[in-house]
Image (cartoon, rainbow, N blue to C red; front, side, top):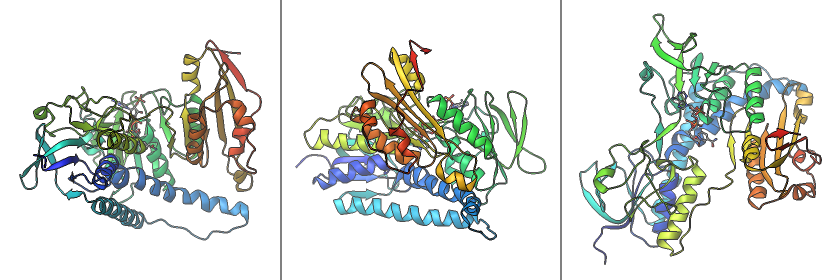
Length: 462
Ligand code: NDP
């Protein structure tokens, strides 16, 4: 019998914490998991899942329009925001139930309370004031939208958290940021009929993505009616006398809108967690410093997911949790493999991507081959919709390996998952070439681009 109340105490019931807690409990460990809000974390409660449901909702107006080209006549349509929010709430309540049941069935103890560290082995349950001890502690408290507190009027703005539950759909919205969240929500609101403007500080949205994807998406979003302002930032936000908000920008524009949403990155949730008392080191941003085994500066305190400074993605947190369990409870030291993470931006059109952008590949390899196709997807021929798909493979000329694959268009996220396997397996361009096409699909383009569109040698296109 150990002197501790638990073998593992998990703080945070999101994707990473729940996976770790469930697996440890199923191995017969004495596990408690504390969550102050709702089980499921950002992904289920106010992130990936509701976002994707809203993306679907926002696509119907285009489906209705496209139907005419295929002989359908769609009658009068209308949209009810409160119905969508309620349907979304029912679905996330169902998923939250699954998360809880998974923990209960594995034998983990669920504690509905905020938990804070008192010292390196002791946790205080804030709801009751009780303290408990654990041999190992796992911090998986995730992140929260950066409130951008230096911006005058930031308290008048919403973040993605509130966007999911607005009492009513605004008529107009200004979204600040050029990352995943800003771009995805700009498309959602626009699709739902909201007059949408995006303002981003850089020259082109989605920094770090392949330039072709960035430009292609920018153009497609503008064609759908989204106004995109680059190289500018909001300077202040104030209430307009007649209602709504006014945002003034650095470049001197005045934008009057119903709602301003800030999507300027997310910060780790570490404030008030008692990390100092326990001796856990954090970065300047407040992220918990961990080694390759997710171990913090205190040997038996671990952290994973968005509360650390690694990659802010649900599957990454889950993977880190599984590696933690292997290492600590299965005697099989395993480090997370964060190389070649396939990812999707659920913009409209979507971006699916894995590996290096053309720009990054040029810096890494003396010569690359770029295979690029831009075409009208089949559905658009009858719908008459002016939209283009872009597909791109980046090949290291020396090894012949495909080192980057990028898709802009319908189902790009689905394609990215499968491209991820190919790149992870180290497939060469010749492997792609000898793969039979699936016809008629858009994805077949990925295996039928036989000739390079161009090469880039030492940074020069040849
Ligand atoms: P991102 O890091 O993607 O984007 C933040 C944006 O805010 C960038 O455009 C950044 O500009 C800009 N920005 C940051 N600070 C400032 C500032 N002080 N002034 C003006 N602009 C600023 O963060 P998000 O909040 O969009 O998303 C958080 C994370 O969540 C993502 O990194 C992603 O990992 C994850 N996520 C994943 C999704 C998916 O997989 N589909 C969906 C949603 C989120 P710059 O680029 O110039 O630095």
